[in-house]
Image (tube, rainbow, N blue to C red; front, side, top):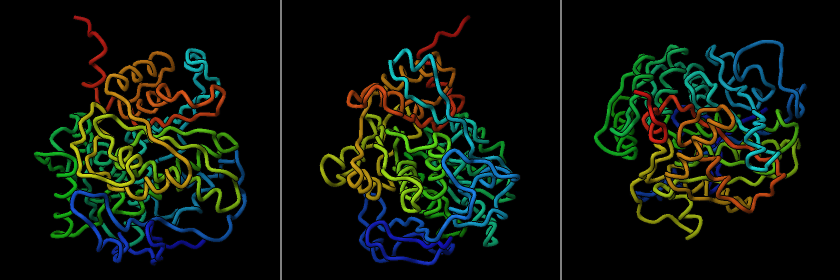
Length: 397
């Protein structure tokens, strides 16, 4: 396979190098308080080496993504990947939840089983492998918590030094996680967007490879693997996928994975992809409705992992939603917490609020046929934010 970066706006192509993060022509059009301009995706060309088929996921040896034929669909050689088992997460068939909702086609893609408990490990693994390939030791990242703890954990396995910036609202459990992994953590007195700016200033001044979501194209590329796994595990494309959405990078990664399968002739049509946003953090939904991004509103929601005022991958995400007939659904914090409780009590899967948003989105989407093969993306474990989960339970004295 051959790989290159391609601009999501002008289609200009670039070599994949540590210095290249954005398309310079489109990035020059950047406006303040707007999503990134000139974000890049990895373009692949060529043919897969057998074996590859839907339902065939195992290779003889290796860890994490190296066990899958889709390793050859990634722009970093497998030998650079740290020995940590990212990916290969289970696709649940939740019988009780299916019966309770009258939806026999529901599946739960459970990325809580990744080493640090979230889907973000997929992006961190590819960034870490890329850093090792190019002899880079320092990584810098801003996060509401999951990307931070993810990069810290994967960085520990890879022998990398990780500098993290998080907003003051980041859940304590995610901070403890990052510190346990040995990361250098700075808490910013502000929002995620403030933490993002601080991290960019730091990497500009002190160097290091930025893992910032969307800004680093490999964050999208790493997250596409969840779509490749869903296809392989089902043995077909799903009908519908619901994706908890904040900055739009997981959403972009899901689209990218399905696009690659179609490009390589392994699948025919794009599933219906639904971006699920909290009412208090719905910039992508509003932009899809209005046709453009307006002045940002603070991302306020109990689902901290999708609390974003300015979604970094906003332009690319809305473009893909429009191109493929995807849509957005906005849900309340109350609906998110109810879905978290329902998911736990009716399937046995304890998800953080942002991850449970996918179920809340399904409950709010009457247009999805009851028999549709529907995948809920469960992006992080509930143990990452016990305070939010405590709101609907009564602790015994």
